[in-house]
Amino acid sequence: MDKRYQVFISSTFVDLTEERREVMQALLEMDCMPSGMELFPAANEDQWTLIKGVIEQSDYYLVILGGRYGSMTAEGISYTEKEYDYAVARGIPVMGFVVADPEGIPVKKTDKNEAAARKLDDFRAKVQTRMTKDWRDGPDLAGKVVLGLTHLIKKHPRPGWVRGNEAMTPETKVKIAELEAKIAQFEKKEIETDATTASQIDKAFAHGSEHTDILLKHKGFRSYQAEEEDGLLNYTWDEIFEVLGPFMIDEAPEPALRQTFDNHMLNDIQNASDDEGWETRWSRESAEITDRSWGAILVQLRALKLITNGTKKRTASDKAVYWKLTPAGDDYLVTLRAVPSEAIQKLD
Image (tube, rainbow, N blue to C red; front, side, top):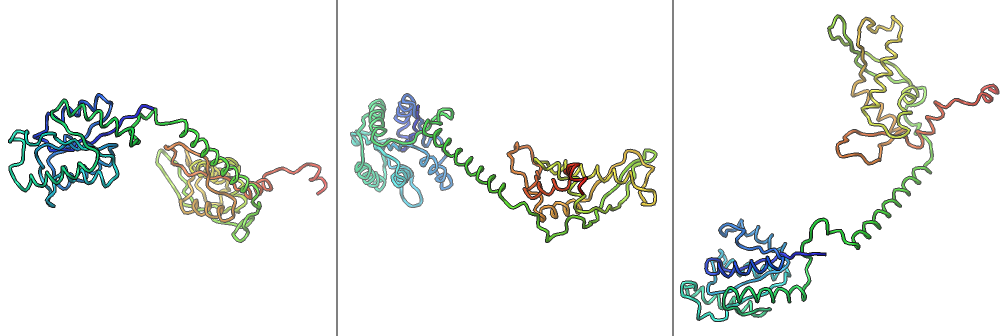
């Protein structure tokens, strides 16, 4: 797999501009991804959070020391040293590159402040306790970075970055296949458990020939004028279940079930006798169950253990709630709707 490593370059900036350019070019030629202060605006505390995040995402950390200690934080430590300490604390492989001849650095590229110079000496000594290389100029530094980083990669392998289409290794594919097999086993076990569940409804709740009132709105048009009236129809729970149950043998979306019941109520209204009080002179009629009554039907059928939520996978755009029969609901529907044998009917 072709990996690319992110390499954080830490140093003072103004005095090492050319050297940093040489190093970044060398890293790019190694197919590495250099990162460093070029990515950030002027140093401040808010920016430190961003810098920490980039260091954490880096595979390797390189620090380049020249003749300046650099701008300091409120704690009196330079940002370069603060970055170095953070990389070490995070366990990121580090390598230092220290100028070979500090005395030969032009005065304009050194600290005039004696306190800063002492801090630089201390920092240089700290860096030299780990893997370091001396450098003399930009090209020499770039060459030593290539050699040093190559050694660092061999000695301390890191995750690196890969293209998305190359990230799926054979090992990962095997693990995914194993997980999919386990999921299939759990799903099969769940189905088998459901299938062996006792097919009994909970008769502690109203059911069968017990009645319930269903509130609805009856709508239509008369002389092109929209009209509507509130009313109710009375059904037994068996009648309600006989209407809805067959559509939930598989799984059905709730809006479709509700429309099915609306159509059933409209048919009952249109076939009702005149003395039942429904308006009969409308055109383009419809019936709509109220939210309250529809919710009551769903709650009751669930309480009776006749229906449960659907479990099939849907597309992300499908926001509907799906319902299906439980084993108890399926058995109960068969007793309601199945036609007995003529031979048995004759015996009866």
